[in-house]
Image (cartoon, rainbow, N blue to C red; front, side, top):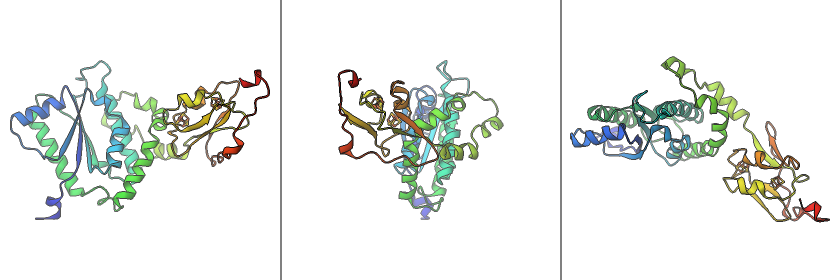
Length: 280
Ligand code: SF4
Ligand code: SF4
């Protein structure tokens, strides 16, 4: 038996409840054959597939990710979530390419609930292609662990990427040519080149803890009468602390194109309040 045939890839499939999941169900009921190693995750809409879901699947060593939704303009919600899925897929392919993952490992298809046979055909074809690529990292010529950690790094940046790309992610294009140009390699390089970090200026922080409460990543360390600091390892670069810090303090700074200053030592973080007014 050839190595390609022996290899049983891990494929995760995000299927929308109304169409593709129905197609998969019909496929099973009709006894059409498709690879047994597809792990299905049912979602109400393909538009619910967050960029982080796909990247996390790859950072966990998945060999292929499939997204199945309703045909365009057939979305069951007036948000037309399948256009969102299409935009996310185009962005994600470029991000994967940038870190060295073969973008063919990600595939999106429209399958209606009546297209059981089409579901089987698409899945058989995708599985054949993933088997030919081999385990994650093989066709890329990069060790699997190295590739997984590179993907994990960009997964941490998803909130930042979504903020920077929000206009393009909300676009509604019509032709494949338009989609081909939606995200360019230049856009992605610029995205990483201009990545913004956040830093709390110890001379301005008044330890009000507003930023700490807003941080979704538990990345801010601080307490009563203690200058707050950002743990850069945990920070997702969402910018919530920058927005939340009261303008009268203006303690959170954006840092781009230069190293983030190191946090001040623990013993230097205590704020000595002189009076009640100084407390706030
Ligand atoms: S940018 Fe600020 S709020 Fe967002 S994760 Fe980083 S420290 Fe937390
Ligand atoms: S919101 Fe601003 S002043 Fe308040 S703790 Fe955070 S950085 Fe310091």
